[in-house]
Length: 162
Image 1 (cartoon, rainbow, N blue to C red):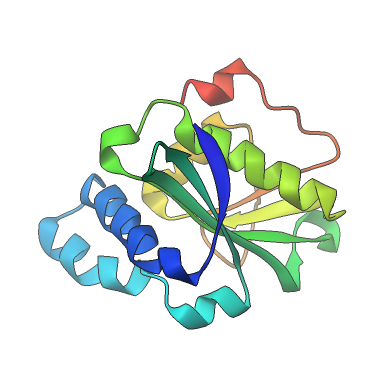
Image 2 (image 1 turned 180 degrees about the vertical axis):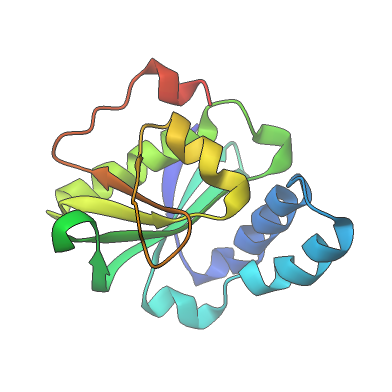
């Protein structure tokens, strides 16, 4: 598996991964059918986010969208990068790809001197981010917010078993 910076030509593949990932969510089919298109990215999203993919051979297995533009506040008002989305195609979930991609994004954000990574997770993803070692943000404006302190966090084997 390798990580690749994705560009706008990858948009159909990115949205395909999102559709596959959300199909596995434990939610009513009608809800998934209505919500999934709203989670798809558009060409304008490339103006504010970087897209990174986990690929094997010529297949996109997972995708993450993240960015540093704007002000994303973590604990004690720290400014951090935002992990806008992380999706793993259903056939590849629970194999460590999501955690490996999260670790890769954290490394990219750390290289850009971000002190932390803010995640505003969907409820179905809360267990994933907890298992990966992110800290829940109490009393956050968004109900399932997590913070990853990039200067101190070390990913371990427990994260890769997610």
